[in-house]
Length: 478
Image (cartoon, rainbow, N blue to C red; front, side, top):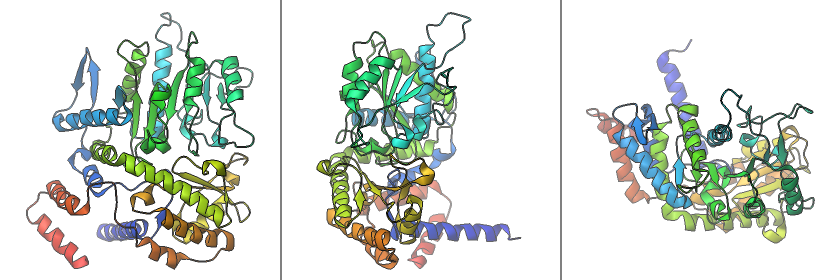
């Protein structure tokens, strides 16, 4: 049985090995991940990471239930303002700690909202009908009855299944909605909630099309856009609030620069009939779904939002250009790229490959990982399930932030073709190539960030001689 110190040393060595592998040897192409900047990471482990700041609006005043929270209260308010600027919206709720929780909070808020006018003593009802994207055609798990919609949608008594219908898609391009069929579906079914957004996401969602169709309905549906994958591309890719969406949710750690959290945003005027919906959403954030809302990552989110607001236009343009270039290069090396070539295959950070000619998606993803390229297998629209995936899903956002240009993605595409088509080992070449992309862009430059990071780190551990001993150990390693 290993001792406590042996177990600690073993775990530390494994942490170090994984850090070095993920940060300096591999190309991370997972579309749902990113590496936060140095300052964001230091904020995440700062003192608030161990604290609570429960708060709730009571009689028009925000009441905090813990002392010592003035700093983090100000951080939360400032983060709300920064994100209101980012979205050009009226309201932001930051307490969900994941994109899935953000969706669940909205769905619970919707159930509370639709039951506001019920007669006393009558049972509460669930949502009558929801329109979303089919999971097998790229829809988010969190927008499904097996996910965050669980127990919040009525069941059809004839089938025993939840009353959820899916966006119809074009036969010739199943990554786009069939607008004619969609118009008929909406008119014939009249859902209470429409959920836009996908996890396999290469084209814009038909927000304006739907908003224009339903705007004059006596009881129009709530239009919600789950932008988890494309949150960091808000504005350049799509602007849901300008197109008619009521609610935007998302994860803050995919194309956005932040730590792993969720966000809910709304554009609702003070006299809008949906103002009560926002009140209900806030109450489901706390006390409905959170207590401690992970204050370290909240602090990191504020720092990340500074970075996003400062660099978003340059970053967004480069991500989308790199994705299109990557898709073209993969196609030029003989790989089958999903989407319409006339549209550049993609409008987001994602590129989708069909690899069934060379093995299953699972097999190809593992083969890529063995050569230090990290991607994830993906069920394509004509696959029966994720267990029989024929696709690979790629994202360029993280490596774009580490300085990759269009020509660099062409080189990477060449390595991927060698791996996928011919099963040739190129791990050493890939690892050497990765050494060219170790410095993060679109954040404070290292010469300014490192002194600040050192001061933050020193404040986390203000013990006598701690920093001196730590720096001596670090210098010996370097």
